[in-house]
Image (cartoon, rainbow, N blue to C red; front, side, top):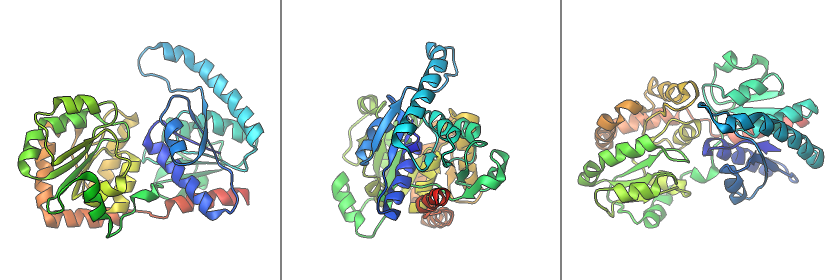
Length: 359
């Protein structure tokens, strides 16, 4: 059983681990457990896996009726997690973060079933910190995580990413046709995370006319929440700027990108490492303990990415991007350094750790 979700940053690593288990085992049954109403309930079936949902959500920072419901949701989810474990009889249970992983891993550990959690960020999430003492193994993306987790349980594996983003030389021609873009022009890719990012979208709107005037091509993933609004607010349509709510064909998008503008979530960074793309990171300030800034600084300090703070993006982002697109030497340095930080075998390494637990 594998649990995790809420954002693509939890879902896609979980799917990658499941795919590796399928490749390594001739006969394996995998059941995903998510949170009802969250994006994993559609994204996991799209990847070909069965998923069931628990009635669970997080605690809101502000006073909310949802907070009053939380104890009831938690009790319900733990009860149903025990029922799922009794019926599915898993040999191992894996959590990658997200609301549903807490109740499921709690129930699995109580039943003495081998358990493993995977932490994507350089700052440990609340659910994983609460589970750390109960589980058998903890796979992390970065060294130095002993400050959050028991050292004897840690294995540095890196972050698993979608196999579909792996690039090949023949991909560019197909990608240009897919997006309807010119092979002779440079391309900027803008991704604000799987759910989008309002402040990044506002930065792009503020510099939209500069982008059009530059002559560069742009693939802009707005996120579903903001898609219609962004289309409505653009000053003018341009056939060189492709606006999408969500880009499923990320291998095409990365293949064309000369520079990527991205949030600094763990999955986004892992994909940038694997593809070796020069990146400008705009960390979200609205995450626990500002962990995206910590993620981004870890790269910027190694000259593996450019950091633009969210509160400086309206003034700096577009100009910084246009300068980087033109600077071939700088792009080459960033690409070499970020690719050197990648751990491309992460899904298989995590799958191996799971198999060791049940051997």
